[in-house]
Length: 237
Image (cartoon, rainbow, N blue to C red; front, side, top):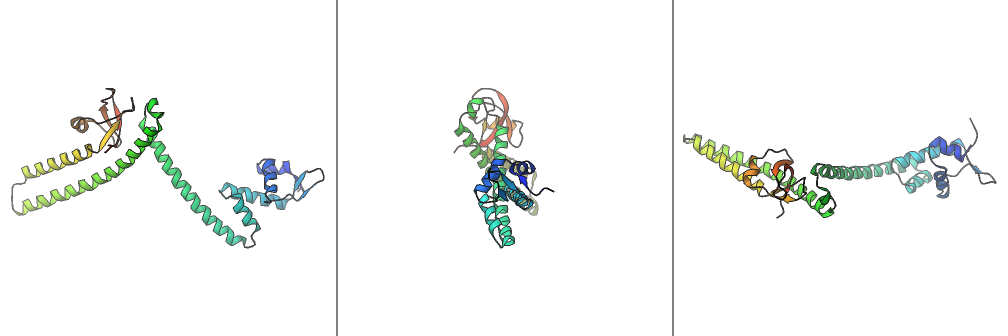
């Protein structure tokens, strides 16, 4: 084993640049074992191990200031635990932010707006906000559906208890409840055409008979006249 290694050899060994090692030296993070008269820096195994630790912590997201504090602190174990906890929380926050960004990007990928619409940032922002409002609307629809089912069960129980004819009344109740829910949902949504990028509201009949997925409905755009699967968003109030 060699007693000393040049800065070039250490850089190659640790897969970093010599500029990085000089920067660590300037910041008093890790000094070479000695510097010759010609300015050449040389490192020993002890410095190389410290450099490995610095690079490892840097890859975990620690700042050079944190790493320097850790290396200089005599109570290193306690400091390391505190820094690890702090970095863990920071990373969790970053992951949450990235996940949110990924969801927004995924929405944009599915929208398939026209080139003209994509050049208008405000259009994209408005659509994203409306999609967020749509999620709230859908949760509300689930609650209303459950409430309607409970009411229907209560009415059926009352009719059965008093031995009244149920068929016509129950059918009417189901139809009225279904139409009311459908109308409420219709009044709160609109659609984005993937061809022209415009927002439009279809007729109530077209809305109900159109084939659809959880996010799209196959409609004829009232702006460009083309029939496509259009993105469902919350209607502007």
